[in-house]
Image (tube, rainbow, N blue to C red; front, side, top):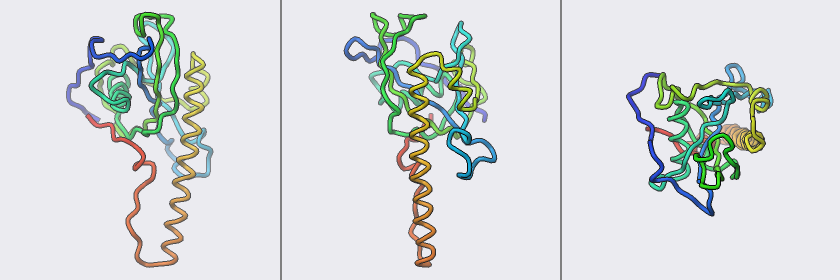
Amino acid sequence: MANSIIMARQGRHRQLYEDNFRLVSGCIPYRVKKGYEDYKSSVEDSLEVLMVSSPNRHDLVFPKGGWENDETVHEAACREALEEAGVLGNLNNTQLGVWEFRSKSKQEQCSLKGGCRGYMFALEVTDELDSWPEQENHGRKWLDVREAFTLCRYEWMKEALTSFLKQMEKDRTTKMNSQMVMESSVTASTVIPDRQDPKLTSGILCKF
């Protein structure tokens, strides 16, 4: 998808802090594999997640960054996904969890004591930009969920990915139940009210 020029935010003058922790927001971008749109395969088998490379390092991480005082935690997660990974989509507004961690390689990225408090969400990717603000520093790579687990360098990332799978399983169950209700309604009546995808009604559209 082509895109207009979008600039990444610079500086830390809007950065939020709480209890000596730098507040961070991020997401696990995901998509359904081609040919796995039905519910015959497990959630783990049917999804791919997107990770980005780190500057001057060889490991992969999920998009995340500082939460600033002029945006919500959801807006911050969407912005980081755009800036670091060049993706847009539907952000599930239910957080995967909150993790506290330290930056060993670049302590200045967190608080003066090196502590970060990170809020993570699931992002269903709908658009991939051809270029993005931090493309020179962050490459992106789609991965099988099992492979992503092996590449998670930090324990908190593995925990976030585990929480992500649980949320996806719950969303799938909700959607399947909704479809069953719709099928029952078709049988019972020829007049069917409009219904919305429960996954979309519980999410936030990331659009810039």
